[in-house]
Image 1 (cartoon, rainbow, N blue to C red):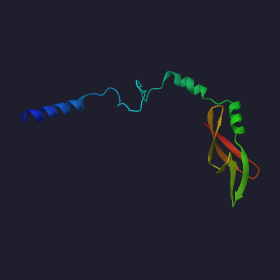
Image 2: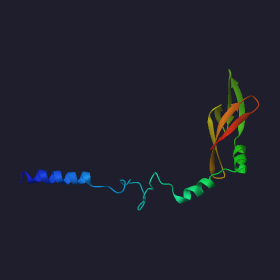
Image 3: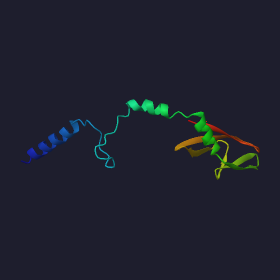
Image 4: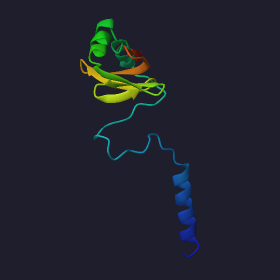
Length: 121
């Protein structure tokens, strides 16, 4: 009996190590019945969603109109602008929501008369 128990335990653990696991471990926070898609596969409707994500010029203009520049100051050789209540400088990213969608813009440049924005996809 002293020899049988370690042999049985060894066989049991070897069987566990050799057993194949066909699905990934379940995350306890997933909804009941949820199965994650494989990371290397792209769903068929993903291409359709990508085409829906294209931004029209009208949507972009509406988002730009929501960027409210309320002030520009110069401190030494640097310019700062207040955009939607947030102090930014050239190179920083600002966001705005328009039509239920979030738009991101990089502050391209600031001078005493204007602030130029660049849309980020």
